[in-house]
Length: 229
Image (tube, rainbow, N blue to C red; front, side, top):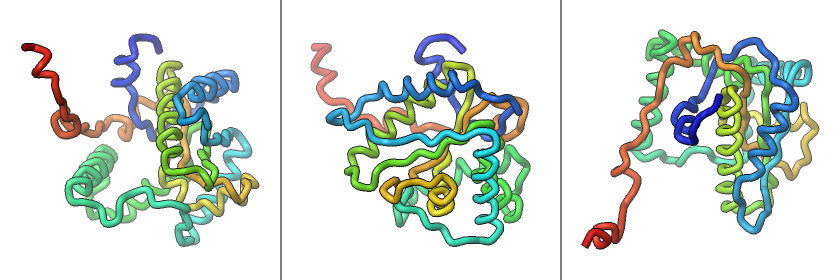
């Protein structure tokens, strides 16, 4: 894909169905190098990417799916969402979930269907490349901001290269499974997963779009009226 930055920004979507096509190693390396160009405080460059495909990815997915089938308790190392979640945020969460399930013709009362779709997080939605994102436990809260910029840069490079991706926050729910399969150092905290590949644009799950907040809901402007005097 080529085009302006706006083209890349506004065409990027979280993709949850992929074509059965491999991703070239050199392309993955280019995504990683681009991501590391993101800013970070004091140039600490926090975060590690553990990138899997083929058999190593299949083995990790098998272990995660076993954990799901056994209904193992979640053992994540940090809280992703606010607790309790404010009503206005809960409304956004529900709207996104309902839109996803509606695209898949899963009714609100179809709990089995919803569970099955959620379990697809742990198969990286069928993507040919699965990535586990970690950060050192000793990093401060500000380093999570740096990690977020690193990941967004990665996602934009993915889009610019004609691939697609989605973040998988639910991957952190089974941190111990991931630690075991990848032999991670205890000091590495599992933050999330990423699925990368060529999007299956015809799949219903890739047809829905989430809504973004209006500008006046999140941005306040000061002093600009004075400039017109």
